[in-house]
Length: 389
Image 1 (cartoon, helix red, strand yellow):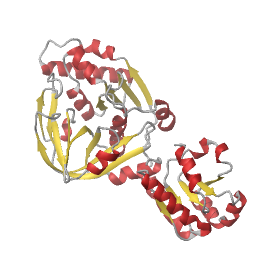
Image 2 (image 1 turned 45 degrees about the vertical axis):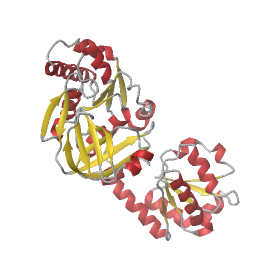
Image 3 (image 1 turned 30 degrees about the horizontal axis):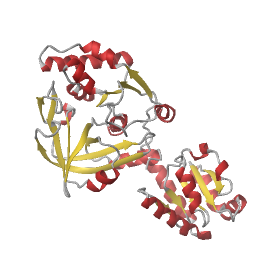
């Protein structure tokens, strides 16, 4: 655990370590905490690597608000949880910082109380985090079949960061390789869809891929067929498969599988009211549905796409995003209606939740991920463990 202690320029590192000797000692001994103290006069020369994986920000004195803003603006700091026991105007400064975070669309939290109360809260968080800490992406291989679709201007990821932080390898697959495997479709739509599935699966096996995403509309143009059914079947078989080359959504689907052991439906928010939210797409895993109908692809009218009727039960709606996967949205909702309209992608499901405040003002991209069951608590533990906002 790493705790970054902020002090004003009126105080010294020695003052902080002496003034808070008991609290810092308890944090070191009980939480195995690494303590890093920084002030305004040395923040410019402060190594950014020291900010990696900071778990808590301790506000030691007043007058640290601009110091926090300077560090936060660098983008290296991920946590928004502060410690402030009230001495030396620390709580006043923490409250000002909390308001700053709120105004900038961030959720923050202050841990406040006696030394023993503060340490207990942090110890409880450690225990809760460890319950979900067995998750590892190390050794995972993702295949990117072609580049992301042109319209996904905010859905890319930092591939180097994926490798360095999560241990994930990205393999770039020339789309022409797949196109050659499929060939130009002159068969029935279902036979062409099956051939596309076999071709994608063959490459996944050859490259030992755990997950893949595809620039799917190029397949429609080149091969006169779609990959919708292929992706639905691959998700059922344990190869996490997304469309449009959307890496942020693929990582969300991969998280759903690894953390919650659930196949995921990648979908577009389509109709929002003050009481309900409808999502739609063409690639729902067949195992999530009690009934499926094969239709044509929505936008092109070509090939095969899946219309699935999902059980009207509890679901988790989530999205993990940002180029360094430092943001996440998660909520739970009950499905209340399956419907079908030619004006939307083929699988359409409506939930009893108003997502307009989030989606219309703060949405993390377009695609979101839907999984069966109530998994928000597990996902939030993962967020805390990895410093995700």
